[in-house]
Image (cartoon, rainbow, N blue to C red; front, side, top):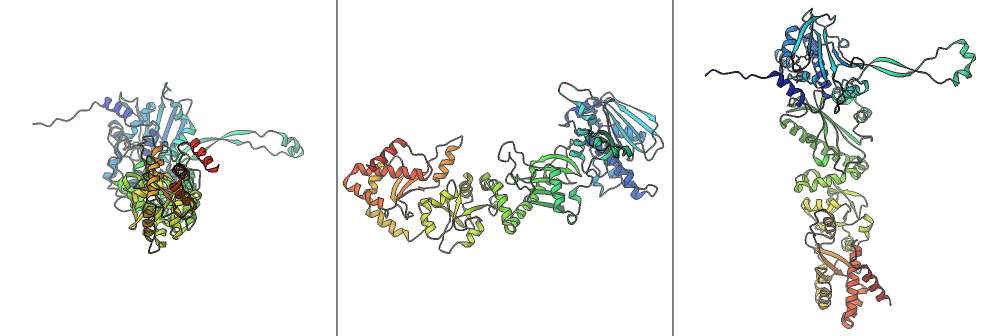
Length: 639
Ligand SMILES: Nc1ncnc2c1ncn2[C@@H]1O[C@H](COP(=O)(O)OP(=O)(O)OP(=O)(O)O)[C@@H](O)[C@H]1O
């Protein structure tokens, strides 16, 4: 059976393309500038093999000329130009890329700077222009030609005069509509912004005539000398002076040699790119030439962005392909727990989709992301080791995010993060890492102890810490909501289990005998107290951890009181309850009163038990159930 060719309705195809490929109209300029840069590159590559052509870098540039009056925008280049045949082929056939063909024909192995590959970018001009005119003269021809099109209706080509080799693309910018303001594409200031945003690192100068307001120079006349006072009173006069300026930075900092760059260069780049207003605490410059080639400059900011812990904050790195901006915030490049990192990645090896707004498949991207993640982690570990003060600053801002990282996704990333988290230490009186804690643990200490509370000061005073602190064991203070949850996910660090100081069993052995004795001796008293508080606590028992304080809560099971508080604040409040145990210090004076009441006055025992229960609530920062009853009870004790 004869094979039939597909036919394409090219008018429809062009319309579809113009209106549905790109999200942002402004990228037409990126596409036309990229084409101009490709055209100059082609001369450069030709010059490598053709001795009749010399490549003097100063002769090659791109010029952008807006004209508000005629409502035109011209993009000129001194590149290779097009012959009549090439105009037909390249601009008359959609999806025909002369640039891709050039790369193949010339077998350019290092021709990765040539940007064009799909043969569609040029038509993006019709998103903003009613008429597109191309005036071009090829390096291989003495004649120049004009290609003109109003879009879907087709195009015309005719011979014209043009002195120099190169191409001018003239766009007749559309009139404004109700929804779209096209004026911006003839506005000098806006155009500069678009160039900076997408094409800052095009290797050739992108020039524009810029009108600047300058102080008018006053001619110095001899008479003026005499009238000095009069001169000083005069208002300064200004004038507009037009100067041709290069808008783009051209050489991307990431392609420069690291040794030639100073901290200041990186900071300037950080500021210019508006990554933040602060001075980053560290930059990481990566150049990889392996399975996937890429350059990256990453920054660890010093201060936390105001919206960091809100839904509005968007993580991501800028993604460039051969120096052209593809995505402003590529979120796939950063894990959530490193979402504070700013910076950019440039790679020649990305498979872009046709609009260059997305990637075709993300194998390369995944490789880059993994590599980046490891580099950030290593860098943070180095700062932690070598510059503790700086790390503490950083941790104050972003430590919470790291701890969330440990907790999230059921601890999938805990291995990556456990060495980066720090907690305040009861003995060191500063933030310490888990590794440092382990290093200091005496042999007899079984667990990594922690205590939770609102602030270090409050935890310091909390009765539950008494026994562990008395043993001389270090306690980590957890003051943020996430802390205990993260630790529950971590479960162990270097085979050492975490233990809350409120846990029923603290693993401190010599207390066991005393505990058993107390249990036996005061069995009936505690039974009585248990029945008084039966609907409020799981148990009332003799404490083995209290030394000087009369009463405290501990918990049985996984859920601690701090976790109960946090979980109950959540919108989908599941009414999670910690199994509270009211612990009574049998060595305290108050206990004698309890015994006395138990033997002589059962009402008093009930009164005392309720007061002690409410006191334990207060110590935990929990609300007393009935404040009026509580104060009345206190008064009863006083009279
Ligand atoms: N300023 C120019 N000078 C010389 N040739 C040009 C110029 N602009 C476009 N061309 C030619 O027209 C072709 C089509 O351009 P177009 O922008 O549509 O696609 P592309 O740049 O090849 O690919 P992509 O869609 O990936 O940008 C180019 O490949 C190039 O050969």
